[in-house]
Amino acid sequence: MTLDMQVVVKFHPPAYDIRVENAPIPGIEHPDDAIVKVQLAGLCGSDLHVYRGHEDVDKEMICGHEFIGTVIALGSNFGVLATGRPSLYATLKLGDKVVAPFTVSCGECHFCRIGFTSRCIHSTLFGTPSLPGGQAQFVRVPKAGGTLFKVDDIAAVSPNTPLDDSSLLLLADILPTGVFAAIQPLQHAKLAAIISGIAYPLNGYLPEGLGRNAFLSAEDTVLTLAVVGLGPVGMCATVSLLDMLEDIRAERGVQFRIVTMDLNGTRREKMLAMVESIYGGQAPPNIAIADLDAGRDIINEWTGSLGCNAVLEVVGNNSALRLAYDIVQPFGVISTVGVHQGPPLPFIGREMYDKNVSFDFGRCPVRAMLPMAARILLKRQDVFAGVGGKTSLIEKIVGFEEAVDTYRQFDKGLCGKTLFDPWKK
Image 1 (tube, rainbow, N blue to C red):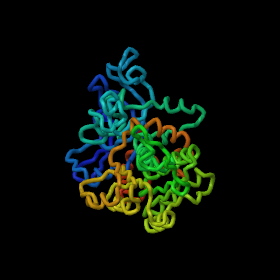
Image 2: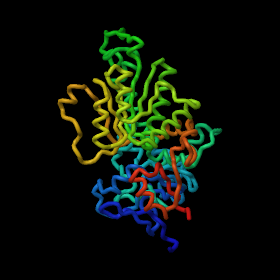
Image 3: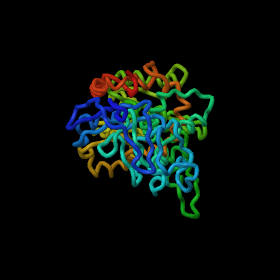
Image 4: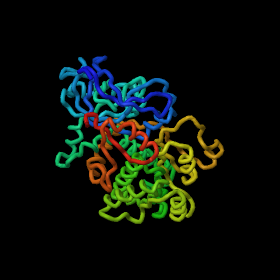
């Protein structure tokens, strides 16, 4: 391999064809670009949609949308004199360690300014034919001043907290996505009555002259939520949800119950170990980890068959979405962050009308969620740090020479969250 070439993981269409190949090292193409030397790259469940041929990708491409690394080159728009633009254009330097969200965001358009960064007008997904991905030794990052996040800014929040390098990779996608799945229902108007203790519609905007005097009893201010799917994103969503609900309980006295559900026993065991770590060795009785049938029974027992106030669906297929609909109560909220594909949704309009269900679908605005996700990452290093431990979310780190077999194992559910070290021999 020559000095201008690198090692990458490539997908070849139509499906199930991963190869480790040489490719040119990218260079600066636009003054807003940065080149990042990759330290670690992730294998994500979303990568399997391409791997299985579900995304209709018809060109070979460099895989991966999760990576952390070091800045080795910057376009001419970076420098201390850069003004009127996102702050990184003035402060980002060669040698800075960074996390890259899985989509490009400029930080300057309408959607970026209001926080909807995943719908930036320049949004491009890493690991697609249009933008080579992070399962490589080097990556070009467009709009880098609006996209990248400096690791120093994370560490500065809690400088005395040791920060595991492998855990930083979770900030590229799955932890912010878990935070997004959790915060959508907690900020939703339909849960405001329970969280505020004031009955709808008196808990939000009111025309002048109407008072907020419809206070709820204790039995009506208990939140019951479910998480459907305990893959890596589902685990991140559960940890995030617990953190937020404990804050709400401490601030407002609102009690909560959570049922997490998955068909895979190994995932349930991992989730239980994480919950036990969070709560000092024993899972509290208001948190249940169950298979689908047992989960339904627990929800019915806890709610008198009313159903959950909100369901987090983090699988991305119609059976999970249908389950979420079945277990949510009328006027409930379904927050779905799974990457759904071509099949029509498994409900009809009459079902939506008859249950007054609200859905929040779509891609996580990772760049906007990063500060909140970084806070949880620092707080919960007991479950997010480390590799291969009983409570560790990350199962292993392998070199690119194991990429073909790792994709196969991950596709069949034979391994958990796996990271690639592009430099490992």
